[in-house]
Amino acid sequence: MLQILIISGGLAVVIIVITAIVAAAHQRNLKAGSNGSARMLAGSLRDEKLRSTVILNGIEDGVMLIDGDNIIRLFNPSAGRIMGWVPNEAVGLDYHAVMRLVDDRGQDYQEDKNPFAMAFQQKVTIRDNQANGSTESNKQISLSITASPLLDSDGEVTAVLGVFRDISDEKREEAQRADFISTASHEMRTPVAAIEGYLALAMNDKVSKIDTKARGFLEKAHASTQHLGQLFQDLLTSAKAEDGRLTNHPQAVEMSAYLEQLTDSLRFTAQSKGIAVEYVLGAAGSVIDATGDSKVVKPFYYAFVDPDRMREVITNLFDNAVKYSDKGKISLGITGDNDVVQIRISDTGPGISPEDIPHLFQKFYRVDNSSTRTIGGTGLGLFICRKIVELYQGRIWVESTVNKGSTFYINLPRLTNEKAQELQRVAASQPAATVAASLAASYAVNTGAAPTTPQPIQVPTPPLPAPQATITPTAPAPVAPAATGVVK
Ligand code: ADP
Image (tube, rainbow, N blue to C red):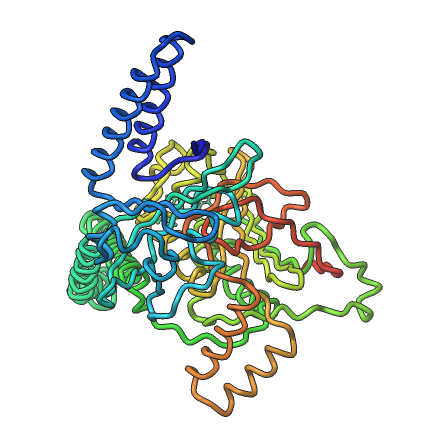
């Protein structure tokens, strides 16, 4: 009998019921004692099997059991209906032939992305809501898959239990909703911009004469209109980010020079609020002796990103740091190792409580506490940041201590100097699509896919986690501090 040790996902309840039935039968048999009749035992087991069959046949979700040789041992009627197979014909076949998974571009999933293969390899439950399945008649459907390993008493995977659902309708509705939001916000931005312009004119002494009371009203109306305009802009950007319509022209960018320049252009907003701004190259807190200045070799931190999109991300994080802090310092830093470029933006603001952190990068999430409630915002900024960083197979997360401050980290796959120069040469001579294709190939080899969910707070020492290469979050490995450190 297979021992089900790790079960989760949509059908966990059903499987637990099955396990409970088997356990109950076992209990009854124990109660029957050594004198219990063999007939009772056989009857009881027959009953339990019948009940399991009824449950498996009756549920809406597809259930598939794969053995250690990748052979399908169980394929319930819903699995057959979803994938277009006659269940009995699927049983006994290699699951790859029946559950062909493809990505959005129709490319077959590699084994390191296939949730069933990953459950075998990693011995943990893998969830994937991005897979497309190709049915028996080659129709593509969107699938939500949970693959749970079944472990024996030695902790070895004996089989994987797959539970899956066709989510094509949900995905279609989601796309329609995003389409509506993007059209509506696009249409509404224009009149809002006009109102904002006319209010600005009304408040302009050279154009209109208004008394102090009226000016007060207009200033409030102007601020609200600006907020509305920002909301529509954020809605539009997030809708585009979700359905992949965000314009994106990645190129090889040397991120340390880029971040240094960006810091200079941003520092004014913070300084006007009395908040200091620093740019740190290398490991946090390490300072190069000024006398050794000429000997310092600054490393190149190349990443393949659209500089305009990354400016949005960093500006957003910086603006939040300014918005939510009253005093202190904002620090923008960059470091990395062979594989990762890591950017961090730290502040000495109010911090974020641990229970809010897992939700921060979700749409419309705003922390509701006394220190931030009165500050305006849309709750879309961090969601947009995450979407943009994920465009580049990167990761964004935050570490924070209440009343001390927050540090937002961004990890991006690092390009070698050679690769960056090659890409720059190719970009100079070829269209962007060719460059992107060449880079996508190298990312596939080096980094794997980006995680789909924000990671929980990590406190590594030194605090520089590396990017995740799989769907399932695991503790990130620390990035070794860079050899140099320069504080500007
Ligand atoms: P908003 O438009 O509300 O700022 P964001 O998505 O940018 O939306 O941020 C989500 C929430 O995260 C904010 O409402 C705020 O409560 C919290 N937050 C973001 N950045 C910081 C920060 N640097 N310090 C404290 N809280 C922050």
